[in-house]
Amino acid sequence: MKRVLQIIAVIIAITVLGITANHLMMPDTHDQAATQMTKRAAAPKKASPTHINWRQPSENKPYPKWKQLKDPWVHVSVQQQRVFIMDGRKTVYTMYASTGVDNSTPRGTYHIQAERGKFFYNGESKEGAKDWVSFKDHGTYLFHTVPTDQYGHFNVKEADMLGRTAHSHGCVRLAVPDAKWFYDNVTYGTKVVIN
Image (cartoon, rainbow, N blue to C red):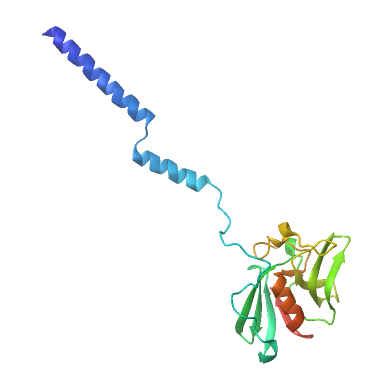
């Protein structure tokens, strides 16, 4: 009888050790959930899944008819990286934008100047752009397309920053068709507010 009790004790001991070892090697579902939450919290946040196509208009609606606006003006939001085409207090169109890195886009109220053109290239910065319109210092601060090289080919890496982060030298970059519309429609003397 003593021998049977010893065998039962050994079996119980082995069973307890087996269960303990299994528990140590395989955390329970509560521990797994906590581990997953920690991993998710430590993982870097992914960029917004929405892709901004700088080759397309910013909105899926027609551009406003400039001549039909009663009180047109332009609002540039540096914080939001957007250009709002305004009619009085009403936003009639919103454009993706990239303003100047390190707050290099001047803040304040300006007016569209006479200088505008279809293409420029700056050898110093090694960047150009199409459909440019001056708003300050007569050709220094502009609205224009995403940047190009000297041959007019778009710099895709820079263009992909549009609407996501400030990345220009101080100008306001726009999607290709937005800049064309801006060039063709926004008239000399139009108020521009940048904040």
